Every structure is written in C-alpha cells, then in structure tokens.
Image: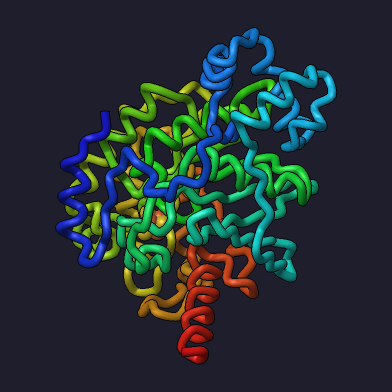
Length: 380
Ligand code: SF4
C-alpha cells in the first residue's frame, strides 16, 4: 500500500504544495455513466457481467475502442441493437482532442488537453529514428515534488489523473500517427498516483487494445522509494530514475524528495528493483551549469551506479523563464560523458527536442496559463 505519511512529509518540505487525497482524483462528477476508457479488461468484464453480458464481449469492446478507434456505440455493428442501446444508457467512451498543438521545426509535437473540470495537461510526441515516435505523457495535474529545475514543480499539485485520462493522451496522439513507445515523464510524479498509474498500465498493455508491451513503456520517478518497490512487485514496466545529483547536499537542494529518501536509500531501492536480464534502469541526469556538471560529479556518478544494470541519459538543462539555472557548456557535457564512457557505462546524450515550442515539462501549460490570466486581467 502507498505510505500516506510520505506525502505528509513531502508537504512539509515543499512550501505551497497542495496535496489532495491520493486515493481520489479530485474530479467533478461529470456523468452517472461509466467511462469505459477508465476500465481494464477485467474491470470491463465485471461491468458487462453486471449487465448480464458474456465475458467475450469485453474483448470485443476493447477492440472497437482501441484497435478501431471507435467511441460511438452505434457504430459497433457486430453488437446487437439492444446491447448498443443499453450501452448508450449506461456507459460512455471519452474521446479526446487536443485544445492546442504546437509543432517544432524538429517535428516534436506538443499537445495541450483541457480536462472535464477545466484543468490542463500536456503530452509531447517526440520523433525518433526510422520514423518512430515516443509519446511523453502526464500522470497528474501539476506536481507536488517541487524539483527546482522543473516548471511543473513550481505549480504545485492540483490533482491526480484518472486511468482514463492517462490512457486518453495515448489514444488522442495515436490519431496523429503511430506511437511506438510511451514515457511517463510529463507533468506529475507517476508514483505519487500509483494506483491509477498501475491501472492505466494494465489498460495500455491489454493485447485486445493498445497492446503496448512492458518494454515499450517507461515510468520515470523522482525517487519515491516505497512506491518504487511496490511498483516493481506488482507490474512490469521500464524504470527511469530522475537522479540529477551525486551528493545529498546538491540533491536536497534541487530535488526536495531527497530529504525524505536520500541517495543511499534510493540506490538501495534501485538495486532491489526486479529487472529481467536485458533490462536496465535508466538514470536521467539533467546537467545544470555549475550545479552538477563537474568532473567530480561524473566520477561520483560512476561510483553511485556501480553494480546496477544502468543506462545514463545526459540531458542539457533547457533554460526557461522563472528559473535561475543555466544550460551547461558543450565542453562540459562532452567531458562529463567521456568519464562515464571510459568507465564502461552506457551514457547517451539525449537531444533536447522541441526547444522552439517550449517542450520542456510544463512550459506550454505555463505559457498558456500565463497568457490566459493576462487576458482575464485585461477583461476585468
Ligand atoms: S521533475 Fe517531475 S517529479 Fe520533479 S517537479 Fe517536475 S514533474 Fe514533478
């Protein structure tokens, strides 16, 4: 179970973070109908059993929703008219369209979705080699973790996303082209919304539906240690750890969660995380000039990750308004990477894509919310 006391701790340490009950989603009730997008195959089966329908109907509905992209029951022609009418009365299938799409010169596309309660979240489609695409999705509206280098962290947490809201980002992006891989690295700390994220993973994995294998989905955490271990014991997913520092002193400063789960504890959890032989934990390391990009940091990083099946993603900090941090120099990035490679580690430089469309976490939302509040002021 999720250790609620952790969040009380984090709340104390992150000024201004609002922390709703993690077991509820905070949504306004929209409809008495059941949104089938919220359900795993098992849950859909149980829902249909309640209507007196056979189990195989669940797979049939999954295929309509996810393989054929149909959300209108009247188009589901292999279901009887009576069944379709009953579904109309009892259920709905949410179907998202982005409110805003920005496309970068490098092909990165950023979607802003407005939710039923008026909140907004972002997803980013990142073009990869060979015409493939990775979709970065959000798991919360805002985030409570307060990482100092992250714009979303400045907003605080508003609420958790429901499983359907997590899955709908993928469905909407798929209408814009195939998504090959999913990374839960958008707004929010996925492990702070563990139950809904696990349900969403089960929906994403369903063979009769979107059929994403666990190797195609990566979840990134800032380091919620008990939830990391619970995740590993319940579901298979690629794990990424947003590390970004090699000493507690620096990590405490830029990632307040480190005050609750310091580096030694985090590394112990990484060593205990169940991995299959070809799996690696990805360690995200955002290089920030003069903060964590020294050669001593690189050497310490080698030591920290010793004995872990690891891969390091080096990302140059993407400067944005409201942050005092600076991007590292090209020379420093190269020197940092060289030390990791010479020690035999897998260390990849991840290109920062979509710079011209504010593709870093929370930037589009931040900009749109800012211009909205400016408009509201102008109209008042
Ligand atoms: S980096 Fe991730 S965990 Fe940290 S504040 Fe931003 S969204 Fe939250």
